[in-house]
Image (tube, rainbow, N blue to C red; front, side, top):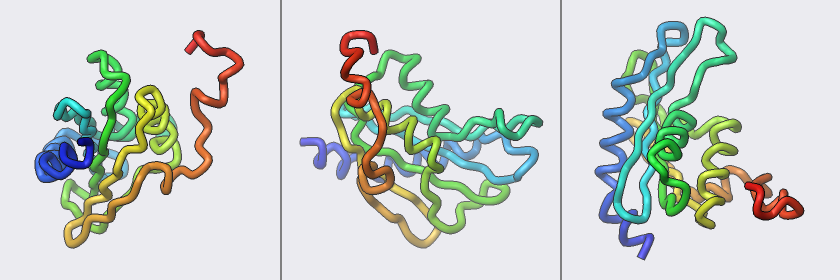
Length: 151
């Protein structure tokens, strides 16, 4: 069933990531990123990068999208993630989530026991792979099983 939802929502997911890119705040790098998360009920939640003058405090698009999903009560059912970016808001080569974002997406996915498809969207190609391929042997809630019930 989840592959059907992904297939039917693929273009909408990519369009949502592209639209989110338009909301990026990237005055320092000029690199705009948009991300969109697809859930099992067909809902799409988006995020855009938000830079900070103290560069290390900048927020990536995927992290913003995951926080937004959590804020709206979504803590399970993540099926797919689309991410795209480029200088000045122009989509160029396919990009993939950074290491921090892979870990944040993994946390959200683990809450629902899913292995979401990640669409790395570029101007001329889209690279698709499961999160488990991008982040093998991920650390997550399962590794804190000795604290079951506290997460």
